[in-house]
Length: 177
Figure 1 (cartoon, rainbow, N blue to C red):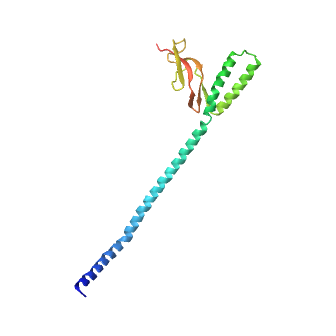
Figure 2: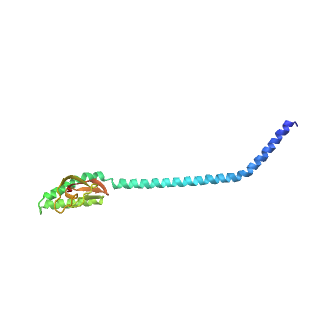
Figure 3: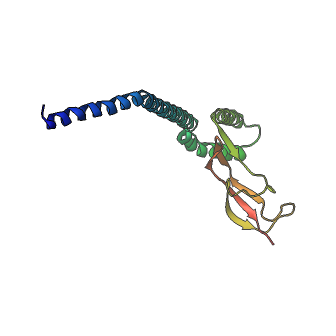
C-alpha cells in the first residue's frame, strides 16, 4: 500500500467513528424532534378545531338573524295598512257593524305581526323623547303637564321588528325654555 492509500483508508475510519458517535446522538435528537413536531401538530389541530367551532357559531348566528328578519319587507309593507285601518276606525261611528269587523281584522293582523316580532312604538304625551325610536316633526310650546323636551303629540306610530327599528314614530316635541 502506498502512503496515499493508507491516509485515505484512515480517513474513512475516522469518519466512521464520527458517524457512529452521531448515530448514538441521533435517536435522542430524533425523539426530541418528533416530540416537537407532535406538539406543533397538536397545537395546529387545536387551532383548526377552534376555527371550525367559531365558524359554526358564526353561521348559526347568521342563520338566526336571517330567520328573525326574513319577514322584514312584508311587515314593513303592512305598516300603511295598519295606519289606514286605525284612521278608518277613528272616523267610523260607534255601533257601526263595519267598525266591529275592522276592529276584529286589525286585532288579528296585530296579533300575527306581534307573533312575528313586530312591536308598536307609540309614545304617549309626556314620555321622554327617544331619538333612537322617535323622529321629531316639529316643536311646540310645552303644553300643561308635558315637560320640555318630551313628546307632546304623536302623528304616526313607529314599529320595531325584533328590537330593531323598522319605522320611527313621528312626534311633536315640547320646546325647552
